[in-house]
Structure formats: structure tokens, C-alpha cells
Image 1 (cartoon, rainbow, N blue to C red):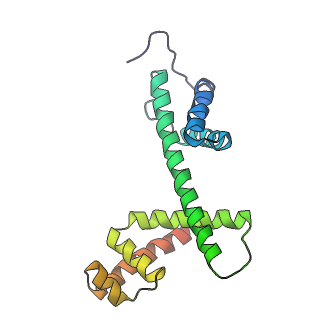
Image 2: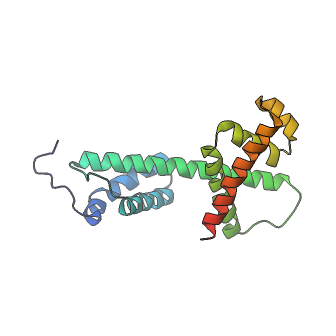
Image 3: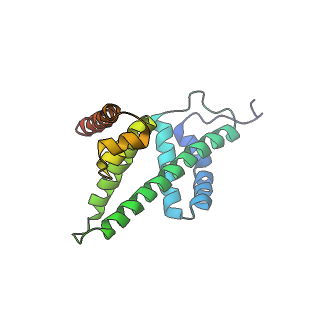
Length: 175
């Protein structure tokens, strides 16, 4: 349904002019940080440039609903990333003393952990669990098999499946 007198913004520039300050305010209230809100608002419009809305927007409400959905997704990604970074920093602090990583090194590690998390999230639950138990906890295959209620042979298949996905991730990152 169109609103009489509403002219659908025909370009990203007009969408940006019409909705950027609203989106930044909405994100600021959600995040409690003007800097994070500005970053995510920028990212939301960047996503819109890279992947335009299929039908466009007929009303300001449609544009804002779309931007709110994208903004919400970006908030979830930010919170998840921060959780991963915090867990990694805590693990690093609990380990033996070593040189503290630079901001760039931390960003690379966190990005890599997020990518691995994405890979594991796309695997069947038992394959991801087997991989984590074997690689992170050092659990023997026999114990993993008992925990998951599968054969050791199946555990080997699960871990091979996870390793293949990790190898593909590495190959994509080298392009």
C-alpha cells in the first residue's frame, strides 16, 4: 500500500538522507554507544548498496522496517563478536604469560574465531561437538563416541567433515 504524496526514494543517497539519522538514533538507544551506532548504521547502508532490497520500498515504514531488521542483525553480530573476543581474552589471560597481542592481531584472531564458529554452526550438531571435544578438549575418540552415542568410525567421519570445512575456509581466505 502506498502513502499518497510519498515519493519512494529512488537512490541510496535519498534513502540515506531520509533514514540515516533515524537509524543511528535507533541503534544508539539499542547499543548505548554513539560510536557503535554510527558504525553499524554505516554498515547497514553498505549492505543495502551491496544487496539492494528486491522490491524497493513503497513507504517510509517499509524502508525503516528493512533498515531495522538489518540493524538488528548487525547488533547481534556485534554482540556475538564481543562475546567471542571476551572469551578469547579470558582464555589468553588464564594461560601462561606471553606477549599480549596487538589490536591488529586481536582483530585477526577474533575474525578467524568467528569464521570457525560459522563453519561449526553449519555442521550437524554431532559433527561440531565431536570436533570441539577432540580439538579443544583433547577428548579421545573412544570417549567422544560414548558421549555422542555413535561409533568411533562415525567420530572419525565427523571430525574429517569438520576439518574439510576448516580447510575450505583457509582456502577461501587465501584468495
